[in-house]
Amino acid sequence: MSPFRLWLVLAAILTLVSTAFSQTPPRDNRPRTASISGQIMVNSRPAANAIVTVTEVEDYTSDGRPYNRSGGDERENKLFFKTRTDAEGHYLVSNLPAGKYVVRTLSGAYIVPGKTVDAESSKGITLDEGEARQNLDFSLVRGGVISGRVTDAEGKPMIARSVRVLRFYEVGRQYVDQWLQNGVMVETDDRGIYRIYGLFTGRYLISAGGFDEITRFGTPAIKYPRTYHPDATEEKLAKAIEIKEGDEVTDADIRLASPVKTYEASGRVIDAETGKPLQLASLQCNAISEDNNRPIMFSTSAQTDSLGNFRVVGLPSSRYVISLNISPLDNYSSEESYFEINDDNVSGLEVKAIRAASISGSVVLEGGSNLSDSIDPQRDALGASISPMEAGGNSNPARSSNIGLFAPIKNDGTFQLTGLPPGSVGFRFWGRGPNSPRIRRVERDGVEVKSRIEIRPGEKITNVRIVLVLANSTIVGQVKFIGGQFPSDYELWAIAERPGSRERNEQQIFTIDTGGGADVDEKMRFVITGLTPGEYEMKLWAIKKVLHPPHPDAEVLSDNQLITVTAGTETKFTFTIDLSNRGREKQ
Image (tube, rainbow, N blue to C red; front, side):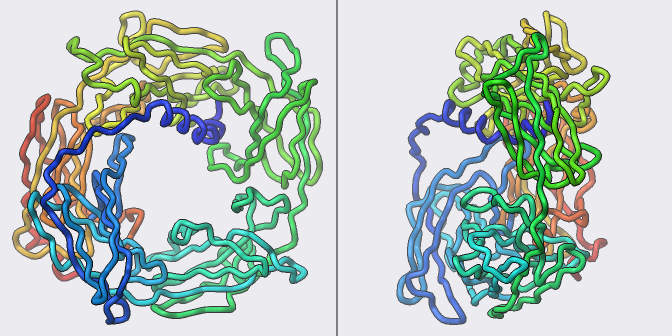
């Protein structure tokens, strides 16, 4: 099964998983003795009645961005508070328990002056029990505005079309994609006019159209090539728009190129064993690049009729892969059929439906501990990573999906993964808690598995044993700088990494426990939780805030230092960094 198709069904699968695993959170009995206060200023004047939110998070970056740690665990916000400023712009949020918080101003049209990233309008802090954090102030000015009109080649307004915003970094032509504006898709109104506000200082590219265009009403039926302001269909020919604080550019019009001619592909779906047609089967058709490993360029779907025939319409010239769109509950998988459209329709395609396979077995804890004490069947699940079978009967681990399919773990520890296509299978434990167990090894018929499990069409593999190890160890640390002051425009990350874990992950038998990481807070403290017993290499990373996502310029401040943690314990660690020979204080 293609990773493309796995990705497309992920949303539906995760919806089922999250619904099945939801439960009432435990009562929060922590002492609520801390508080946060400050003042909001807009254009050097107090901002009355401004909204301020305080959100508790597991982790945040040092400039206030919520952060999900490595390992795939979902980190959900715990507490949320909202207040408004008084006539003098002051706010106060009290009765807070100790923890990590992100404080935000819901400014919308306002930005932090002199800054270039939206995270500057939020601040991450750590509160101790009984602490009263004061003077957490925000000084804002009006952000830039870009507006314009999107029309077709004949000058007619394009209604409800999404407008894409790309902002360049200061280095090279790297950019950040800003599709959303305050959580709302940027799109044109009934006059074809769009307006983007709250922009930071920088250079922007504005575009509309494209085969991947999505609006509130779904993918448009008429497809236009992506067109950049004013009328360029190539990014290198686009006209960049320079924005400074308070600037308003009102004539950033886009004249879309002529619609792209589209074609159709038709064929049928048959049972690979019996040759009989498969009726009412759902298919997914994806436009892909020549090497078949690039991201999806365009996607659409179709369904077979009572005779197993299908017809896919609205396809521009490209290379495509089509296959059954399955779910874990389906009895069929399918081979992938490739075809290419070159200025003409394609017919006579054949998609062979293959009986889906399954893997069943049990999940146990290393050492014979009671599994029910460490996992929650209502929240945790076992996942399968699928490497599809390619021509010649071999699977390609490079195309495997770490998302794959999921199976709940029953109260007795048993599981059953169904709806599997032919190929090779690896495993991961999908734990929803910060200290959820990790996979230690995989066994089949009592023997440790040294490579991914090969599975054939319709095969039912049983007696697979997944051995977990508890991840209840913690590293509590401190960072100390000597010989200088560390610059404030960098964020710090403390990493505890298993030696050689990345190389072992390449085998993909199961998701290796690589370790963990945590941000370093404003008090130069960090806590890395969810670690399994063993040896770790400690590293301290510095990443410049403006470069988000992290740029290769990220610097390792410390040499690898080994530390050993034991099960269920808290281990202390201190980074002592001498800045005197680095010259960083001059940057």
